[in-house]
Length: 60
Image 1 (cartoon, rainbow, N blue to C red):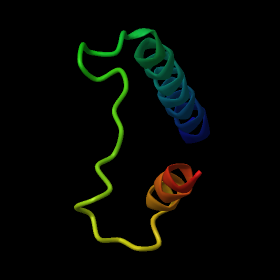
Image 2: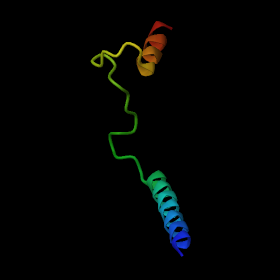
Image 3: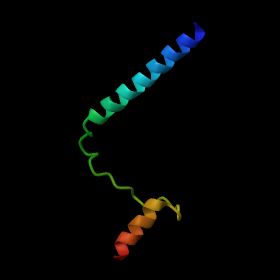
Image 4: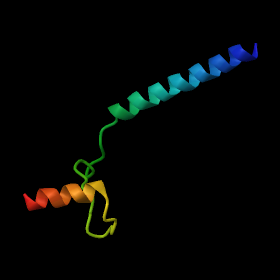
């Protein structure tokens, strides 16, 4: 009986996760947050992949 409850709880959690994921994908992006770009001048992390991509694009 415990195994059945464990399977039901796991199934319910997986179903809830799937439903919340799809509901989140359907939610529209708030106004002003459409094209957010990181501000790489104030971070200071030199091995950041975003910073390296920004520097590559600026040198082209």
